[in-house]
Image 1: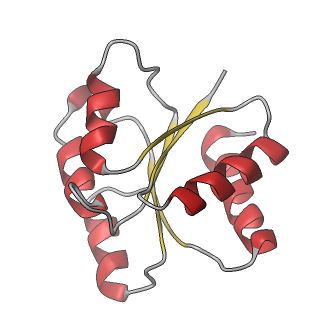
Image 2: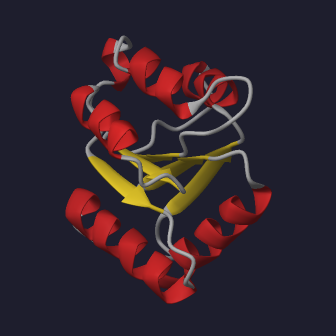
Image 3: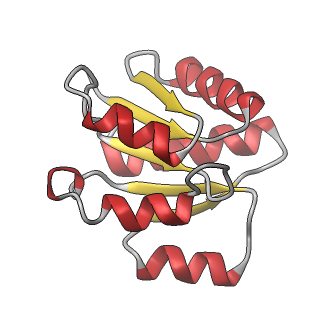
Length: 130
């Protein structure tokens, strides 16, 4: 079973993402964390299944997505996980940062559920072949 890990501080965004993912891909396991620090704790715990794909918000308290992206690239055991930036930002500066620091894709969160569903499905198809 493939696993997707969403790191996002907004509980509504996490709930919507989980619902859209499960509607379209019920065979994919979903895991979440509310910030980068909590995500690292889970990733480094022995009881957490290593995800095949990470969706990462940029703007979060404690450890933001930028810091998480830089830090995960230092972890050799986690380097193979594609990271998709999934943020409300559409800033060219953020897109450039993501590209220069190893993000696999940059998705700006859509305000339409249908567009969000399409974006999530396209990413899952591209990176997991599902």
